[in-house]
Amino acid sequence: VVGGVPTNIVQNPWQVSLWLSPPGKRPAMKCGASIVMADWVITAAHCTFGRLNPSDWVVYMGTSALSLKDRPPAQKRGVTFIKQHEEYENDQSFDYDISLMKLDRSLEFSSFIQPICIPPQGFVFPDGMACYVTGWGTSEDSTTATHPDILQQAQVDIIGNKTCKQEDWLADFVTDRMICAGKPEGQRDACQGDSGGPLSCYLNDTGAYVLAGIVSWGFGCGLAKLPGVYTEVSFFTDWIWENIGKQDGYIQ
Ligand code: 4AZ
Image (cartoon, rainbow, N blue to C red):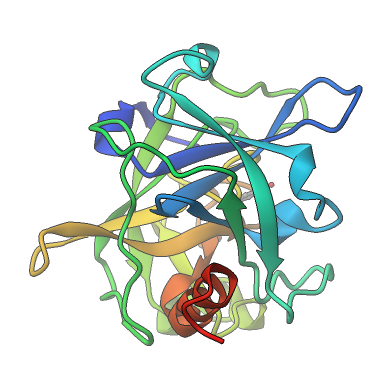
């Protein structure tokens, strides 16, 4: 996260860190994710692409400090199933950038571990709405930057397609499956390693945080008129519940 502040997991109890840990290799933090049910997390398809073997993944929740991930109140789970969106292609478009992961055992919810709400299908987050991006990604766009130990959070504003698709902004790189968030002047953004993590918005009328976006891509990090681009979760609401329902057996 660029331009962020350290935050406690209690403020973001749906935040997950995804680690790739194939046999014989040491685990590496690859992406963020969000808890949607006791045994399901949601992330970006570009995080799972080419890494669809569930047993190669380890998932951690319940800690803001990655260095404390192996003891309570943190919880660790394996993965038994990965559903990557069938329309996702590993081209540079990042269209359909969404995947679901099923955990090998249900989480025990606590003040440190809670799911985030999925918006209704087609829900439109208003232009200018103040939301938050969180993650352990780098604080600047550089090849040498290291990941912070403590979860970072930046307040970013929803930037509607009318603004985001202007020719001197992101133009046609933004599809209907994407939502932009940031500041016109840049400075606050997701960055390398935040991918797959949440863009969370507090809805006053429901009194709950809702997952507006999944960190997906950007040209650099924190640049003016080049806001972060997120998978628009409300485009995929039906897909999410259908795929969870099919795997869990309550839909044929
Ligand atoms: C990345 O490489 C990445 N500024 C994620 C988000 C953004 C840029 C890069 C958005 O994972």
